[in-house]
Structures are given as structure tokens and as C-alpha cells.
Figure 1 (tube, rainbow, N blue to C red):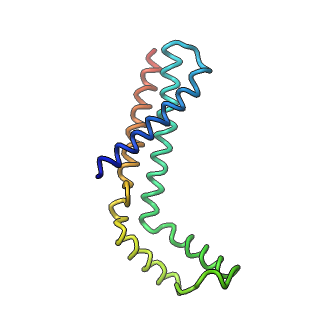
Figure 2: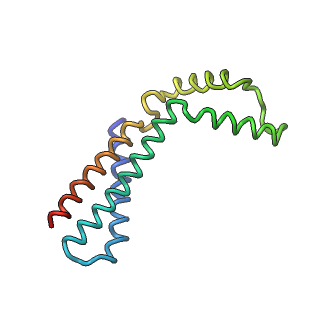
Length: 139
């Protein structure tokens, strides 16, 4: 099942790289240098996107954003008291409840597709971009 998650994410990354390269290909010269530059940019953009999303997923599994969800819940209850039930109590109880939910969902291993796969694919795309940059400077 883990390989299926990697395959889906790599396929989506390949489609994004191809779409960006096709979009940018019309505005550059049709020589090797222009094509390498376009693919370098496409790999870098998609790699940074994957890397940053993976980093956000990793940070969210640590409970860093719990204070923001608690504040939003309390603020929504203050604005619309009848629609949202306020059975949480204080922040400490809320944080403990969120930690128990994360343990039940397997958040420490990264959840459904995993934080590791998104970070790893982003890092691989950035490495490909760095290699293409070196090739571009060598031309």
C-alpha cells in the first residue's frame, strides 16, 4: 500500500512538471539550452511545492497548529453560540484529546500517504533540478 502512495504522488508530480514545461516551452528558444532551462524551472517549482507541503504535513502532525484550531473553535462559539457546542473545556484538555485522535489515526507515521513520501519526492525533484541547473551552466 505504501508503494501505491508513492506511485500516485510521483505520477501527480510528473503531470505537474509536464504541464509546467509545456506551458513555458512556447516562450523560449527551441535549442537545448532553452529546453534544459524550462525543465529545470519546472522540476524546481514542483519540488518546492512538494517539499513545503510535506513540511507543513510534518509540522501539523506534531500538534503545532492545535492552538489555532482551538482559538477558531472558541471564536466561532462566541459568535454563533447555538450552532457550535462547546464541550471541550480548556486548552489542555483540547490538546490531550487531539493527541489521542492523532494516535488513533496513525499520525506519527504520517497518516494516509505519509509525510515522508511527500518530503522525499520533493527532495528528489529538487535534486533533479540542481542537476539540470549544473547541466544548463555547462552548456
